Image (cartoon, rainbow, N blue to C red; front, side):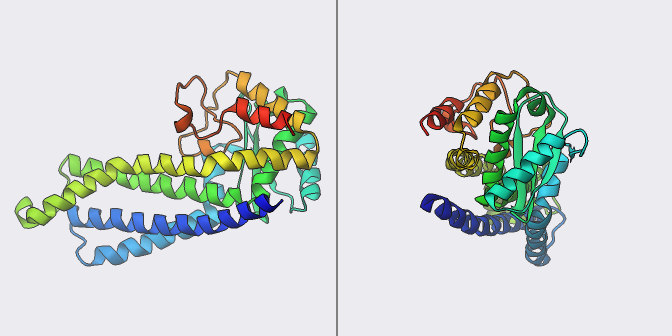
Length: 297
């Protein structure tokens, strides 16, 4: 229980650090863009700050809506998805949490995720493949896992990361392409040696931005998945249910069509199948390790 409270506290201050990190990165990208393209001049710094504030607030207040839209999630229907809605309601009561909004993703892959900025403003999305292929005990285990992410404030941290670092990666790519193809509003002789140095820094930044995104995702994903597994199993008092669900996810060959590199870290398991990647570069801990831990509970 102490570890759970420590994780909640850690997630809260990490969320503020991500906002600060994002603010500085957006400021750097916009300043570099202002230097090279059409010359914002001294106005570029102020513009960068305003844009960073707008995006930070947008990521905090509307990041969950962006994620749900990217995932093509639709609200669960009371008649069609009655068991899902009842399961979410029952587990939210057991966890002492407000009932999250419930969404469904039309996809044959078995997967689910939670998003939002806090337990009062949270959502859980489940694929139709999970609804069809998992039995009631397994689905309950998956929902309990996602409910644990809500309780642990993992959702705020992960949602902020998805929206903000994804936006920085796009800005970095645009900056790199602009410099690569010479779309600049300043003449080379005007920039001089200092301009050449800034251009090199800009190119390096644009190249390294996606790598920074990946490293941030790795830093956020591993430990919180193990903790959500354990907390979810305690919530249902049936670790075997979640373990069985993870086994089915591991054997499922369907790849989630709506998933992206930005949103992959949100899901209960890596949504990409048949991808040969090192465990060190995976956004999730190995399924076999998670299953083994659950069986030991």
